[in-house]
Length: 139
Image 1 (cartoon, rainbow, N blue to C red):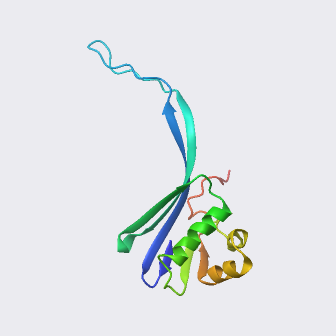
Image 2 (cartoon, rainbow, N blue to C red):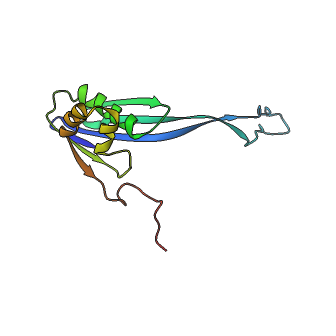
Image 3 (cartoon, one colour):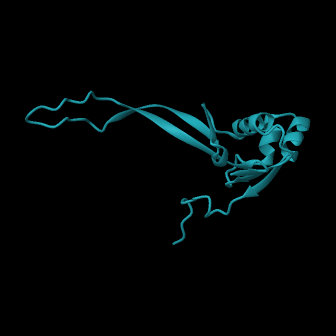
């Protein structure tokens, strides 16, 4: 979630898998209900970047093929140059993914451009448990 003087903005980046059913369902009859097979074919993936500003009633979703550091930096730069062009600083509260880093801007842009964008951001990382991390379990 990002806090600016104008309100709060949340960001979510996820990867989605598309599936196709590989069998045509058999229609229902008087003797049998509709029958379908659980088998599926993989039909690709997409990475979604969703930005929303709940207090303003605004949201934006962009789909792409990848979810890398460079992709994240490009999406953030688009927000900084577009919706938040007049904001002096943007507080960025994000989880601890390896894509959400200052270095991502330097991988995506030349040093001068990257530094100008990074100077406008104040990073705030959520604690591991607050980010909904279920991959680390203690025994």
